[in-house]
Image 1 (tube, rainbow, N blue to C red):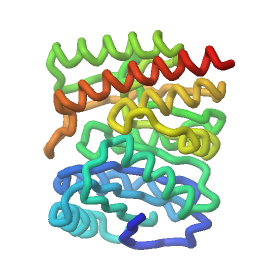
Image 2: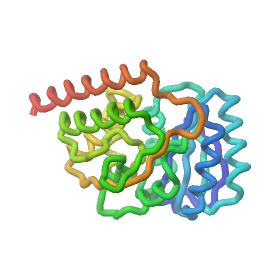
Image 3: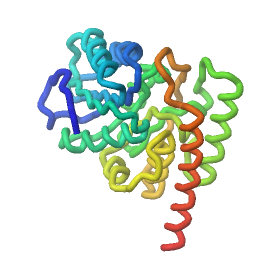
Length: 260
């Protein structure tokens, strides 16, 4: 696993919280997010920028990030790939890297790089009660807000977030949002499972694994905005693969029940 060091502000065994940000052609938005986010972090925090962009875009992203954030209190690492493997694969790579790099980490947070997740909300999720093994920044709580979406996208997302939790008995309102904090225990259980799909469906797999192990889940209201810039990785092909992944996950869960 290739790792580029941005800067290290403390010993790796002192890192308690890892913030993983999967990126793809987001050299403009990642620096904006991190410039705001690092104000909330300290020497026990580490950021992993997991970039699947081609090498020239990755180098530009890294350069822009380092210029934008100055000398923050937290540590920063880059995990370049140059092969677009999917958001789920990037997060899984980040979880494995966190386990290998930071022997004392307690929490792992994932968020989007495109500006849809606000730094204030990321910090609220990161600092939520330690009693929960999964904390989700939810778009579907009474105080939550969504900005910039078309009616069609709102309906599609809402239908998915009613159907998927019902299908898999996952006790959440928002199972498809990627602003989440995991405990070290839940991370270990997630990476121990062979994934069905490493696109956006992996969000469902992660929540399902946590639910199956009966670990406590908390949802926190957030304000979600449409991406600021960059290239969306949500294509019709990705949507089709995600729906197929949901069905494959469903069939596997049925087989597991029959084997019990």
